[in-house]
Image (cartoon, rainbow, N blue to C red; front, side):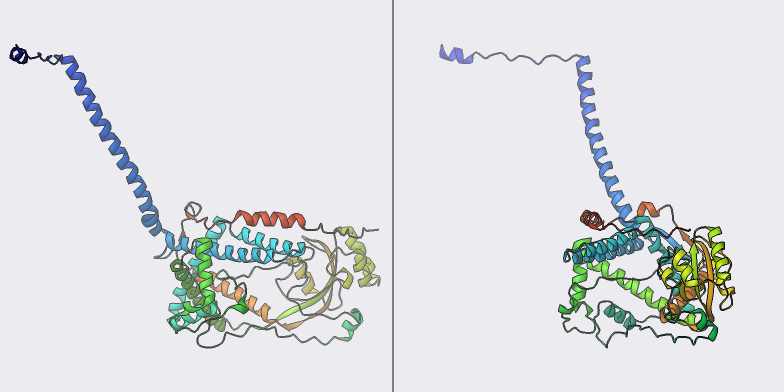
Length: 472
């Protein structure tokens, strides 16, 4: 019985028979699964590919594309971006140091001064403006180096290393170059006519501009700032910095160099390799500029003197009032008294309207033309400029030596004129449409700087406004 029961097997249920319709449905589902898997893989490959292409394009293709060129010499996007980032870090480093100094002073007047300096730096950090300025400087550098080659001017590694050392005050082979000091200009001997015109207490002082206040006088300043200037921050405590002994090929031993590199890396993300390469590029360009400028100026043989006029004026806003003052002067009234009573030029109304000696291109064109045309002692009819109406009296007219700084400004102007002329001989192209798209905006301006500027401006005392004396 037992054996018989063991022999009995439970019949298996046969699998359901699939119809052709069900089989087709299963095949479609399997096919869709395969396509879904394939599609997902393709999408992932495409996404990764796009990301990799973007990375490769940005780091290799775009970085090597030219942003500008001088004839066949190209400036790559990478070299330009490195230079812009370096300049941004340099400006921010100076703002950072100013901010640190400001924290050491609680006097609101000091805070306002520091805030003003930082605000100026922020304006210079406008990305498109800074990027364009840096690119123009790099284009100038190429032209200058091409012209240097024509003049057989070469910068040696020794000269470059020395310039690098001087940048950080680290002199391995001598002492730094002596600072420029102004050579005093001798005071002119006054004629008998000038002695009668000028009060005994008034003495003509040699000045580089005709007035200290360009906004209320006819002074018209000329921007002569060189574009290739590098300003590195000074050490926070330079007297405490000890410079260790270093071998001639190890300028990096300078503590100041280490501090600067560390600051650029930590605060602004500019590593030592980029810092050093960019700095050497800038220094080399500056050395070429200096040597070419020296050669060009020696060929020009500029004069160290210029015709100058010593004049005084009365400035008013109304033409009829100016004519009335002129008539009173013609009748013999005192120039000093009328200047003190009516002139709106607060910088000199109480010193007889004295503008001291000035040369060409320091005044508004109309003012300059009238002043240089006057004989000593002669008074002009009212002269209109953007500042108002001037009655001008000439107190002197002679050839005078330039101050050292004025002569340097003249040299810079003449060299820039020469450079502009040379640039016309080259085909210079810039990708202006790419500058806004590729110009670096990093390192960024810290928000804490804005907070300090706002706070300092709010603490600044309101200036007292002095109303001009009304006309009778």
